[in-house]
Image (cartoon, rainbow, N blue to C red):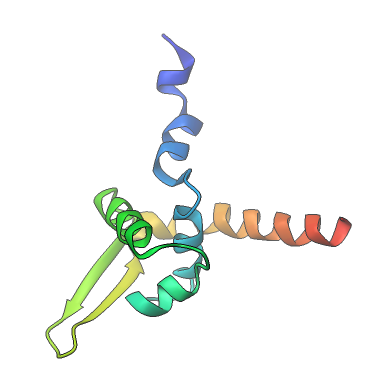
Length: 104
């Protein structure tokens, strides 16, 4: 058995290990957000990359997308139960960043 093909860390990194996915997930920890607001919380992400990122996260069952039938269209994203299970990891990464920035 090759470790890299069956490693739980490899599996996790394939789900959340891009530049943008952890940021999108982190900003949904406190509740659902409208699409435009969520995108504004992730500075530097292009429209195309935002769309690709939320589609990937939705496909992997980490976030859900709800479209409201109003004009103009309203779209909200929220964490699924599976996405919520990443809260400890995401908050730990955030706290590490806070600590490391203070030490530098």
